[in-house]
Length: 248
Image 1 (tube, rainbow, N blue to C red):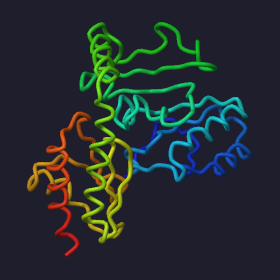
Image 2 (cartoon, rainbow, N blue to C red; image 1 turned 90 degrees about the horizontal axis):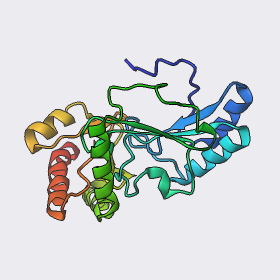
Image 3 (cartoon, rainbow, N blue to C red; image 1 turned 90 degrees about the vertical axis):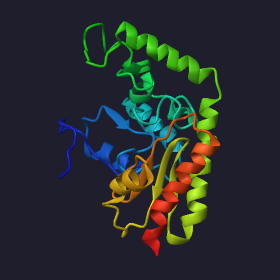
Image 4 (cartoon, rainbow, N blue to C red; image 1 turned 180 degrees about the vertical axis):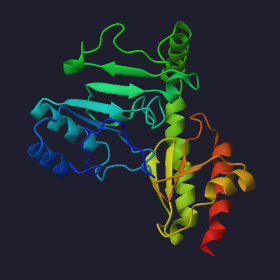
């Protein structure tokens, strides 16, 4: 069973397909915005074929049609991909950006930021949230940002994330395994016909690893951004030990 947004007015098009967006614009005259993840998290760590340039193409479409350009950076934001927000890998600039999770480094808080055409649409009191900006939450966010902006943690996320992906592919690529993602947003794509139903439980029980499988056959890893090389090596080796028997 699949659960989608309660708002049935969303029009869905294939990720990374600009032609499909242009067709949707011709077929529907009530579109007001594009809302997208820079990297699809739950969808299987999907990136567009042309990478983050896709975001620039989306912004062009939005500006041409007076649509809002909206990004969901709940998973990709706060340093995880090697930039504070993933869109910063491109020249795109969203009108609306949502973020949470890493925003408070585990403390429950979320944020919605706006600029340009979206500026002024929300006012004080127009939106409330359990994870809103309490004084304590705001102080935590400030501290997290200060650490990320004034250290090499985001650079480390790129270096160690690449090491984990390359180690997995170097060892398991011969079995059709590939990698996806950016920084410490890591996807290990397994053959689509592989039975992945027990991997999450086996990883926890056999290797003491917490993983999940998204998109049916993609192992998703979201490690700490400050992982050491020894820790990255342990993660890669344990995941290899988990997966390799499946290919024998």
